[in-house]
Length: 160
Length: 309
Image (cartoon, rainbow over all chains, first blue to last red; front, side):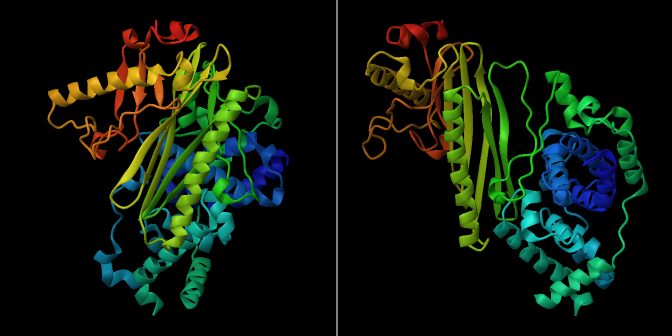
C-alpha cells in the first residue's frame, strides 16, 4: 500500500477511529492524540498489514491499543474505571425519550460503549471486534448482550 | 431482542455523527507530513507540531529516557483473539537482556477483569531465553484460557480477576532475573504468587535455587534461618503470624525445593520469596526473607560466590 492509498484509507476510517478512541479515553483531545499516534504507528508498520481489505480492523486495533496504552502509561489521563459516572439518564427520565442512541451509548461504562459503537455504528462482526479489543468472541457477545439490556432500559420509552 | 436489535441498527444508521473539525484538521496535518518513503524518514513518534499538547504522548517520554524506540505493529487476523499478539514492542536499550511485552490480554466488565502482560526475552540464540519464554507463555495462556472458560461457564454471572505483570529484577552482565507477578482471584479472595526466572549471563544457563549450592544441605540451612526470622518478626509484632512450630495443623510449612522462588537484592543478599498462603495467613501477603551472606557463603558454589560479595 503506498502513501496515497494509506491516507485515503485513514480518511475513510477516521470516524470509526475517533469514535473508538473517544469511547476508551472519553476526552476529545486525548482521542485526537491517540489517533495521531496511531496513524504514525500504522504508517511505519504498514508492511505488517497482509491484506489491504483488512485495513479497517487493523487500524482500529492499533487505535484501541494506543488508547489503552495511554491510559496505562500516562498518569495525566484518568483511567476509565476511575472516572466519575457520566450524567445519569435516570436523573432525566422526563427527557429519556429524546435521547439519541449515541447519547445513550455514551452513558454506558467501558467496554460496553466500545462494543456497541463497533457493532452498531461501524457494522463490524463480533469476531472483528474481538480482534480489535484483544478479547474473544464469547466475551464480546457477553458484552453486547449486557449493553443491549442497559440500552433497552435507557431507551425504553423511545423503543416502546 | 431481535426487534430491539433492529431498532438499534436503524437508530445508528439514521444518526449523523461527524468527527469534530479540529480533530479532522489534526489528522490531515499528520497525513500531509507523512514522508513518501516511510522506511527512510518516518519519525518514531508524532512530531510536536502535529500535536496541540505534549503531555499525552507516551512515546516521546520513553524515547527521551531510552534514546531509541523501536515499534513493531502486529495484527493477526486469523488467529484466535485470545492469542492476539500485542501491538507494541518496546525494548529498552542499554539493558544486557532485552525484554518486551509479547502478548497483552485485556478484558473488563462489571464482574470479570483481566490484564495479562506476557513478557518475552529477546535473544534468538539463547536456549535459556527460549525455555523461559515458553514457560511464561504456557503459564499465562493457561490463566487466560481458564478466565474465558469461567466467563462462558457462568454466562458472565460469576466473578473473576486475573492480573499478570512482569518486572526485570536484575539485568547485569553477570545475572538476569525476570519476575512474573500473578493474581488469580474469584469472588472476595484470590491467590497471589510470583515466578522468578534466572539466567547466569556468564554461562548462559538457567539457574534455579538448588543450582547455587553444593549438595542438598542448603535447604535446611536456609529454612532454619527463615524460621528464625519468622519467630523474630512474630515476637516483635503481635499482628505478624507465620505457620511454624506446628501452629497450623502441626505441620512445618517452611520447606524449600530446588526450584523455590528467590532473587538477589541490591545488597547481594539471597531473598527467598513465598507465595500467598504458603507459609502464613493470606493477610501476610507474599513473605520475603533476605538470607545474610554469612549464612550461605560456606555452601554456595564457587562460581556464584562473587554474586554475594
